[in-house]
View: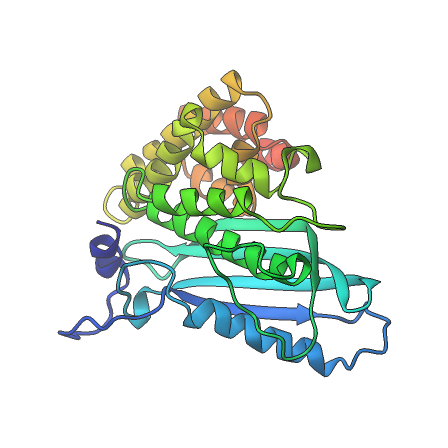
Length: 307
């Protein structure tokens, strides 16, 4: 279903064949200006190229993608310090977008910063990932590709969820499997429940927990029933987007401060403010109330813009 819908959304040519292709159009940027070691900085350019090839050349699903169907995403890896020889601490920012039907607009669907990235890298070492052996022979070296693969499956899960009900389940399970079998060792964090309340463990847990099915309903209502309908009936589309906020409000009431709820709003404040600014007064008031309650970081903006 997801493949049929996205073809309608982004098809711009009359190709009559359907060639097998990888799923991502990923851009990787590695910034190493804070690293003070004597390591040749060319090694980080090599790493950037290797990670780009890893993401774009690997087949992540059983579906066939044409070039115009590929999911555009960005991975910004900022190295912050040397932990030990050839081992680095870093921050990873991951972003992906989702095309909106009958428009040139791409809606942000994932915008997240992971502060728990530690990995070992020596120039020209193999950048690879084995789902059956996530830890590999060197956990510190395997941790980086495990993290990147985890976010690929999260990107896929959210994307497929936005096109069909529970369409992303298989990819969320794969992300959960990486968490379960993740590399373990000194300085490696972010994979365990006790590593914090906002990390890879809890994201995977939230998207795989049957108690939180409204999370999945939210992505489908917001994108497929909401954003995609705006071209033909703006009021109906906006109402569905409001329904998605009601879903999150219900979920949040039963599970205060659930990470999955807060995760939804990351990078969406501009879009939400612009959409509901055009609402009729009663709908705008309701949207403002929900957004101020659910997206506390941007509450003042919603209050001012949705008066």
